[in-house]
Image (tube, rainbow, N blue to C red; front, side, top):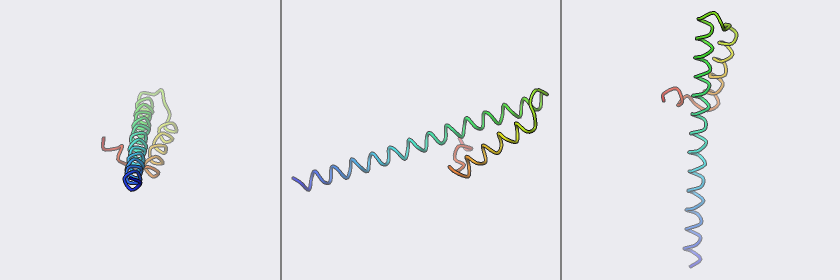
Length: 77
């Protein structure tokens, strides 16, 4: 009986770990998508005279930093 409980506990722990990894992945993709939106808005504002090149550059740097830290999967989605 103890062996069964140990295996069940291990399987539950594995499931929790996989769930946390998936949650972290989804949150990273959402954060990346938000950064891309901000980059697009900054570029649009710059092109229409209401934004600055500096704001666009800062938004681009934020996207690049996120991609370096979390991978670039959010760019494909």
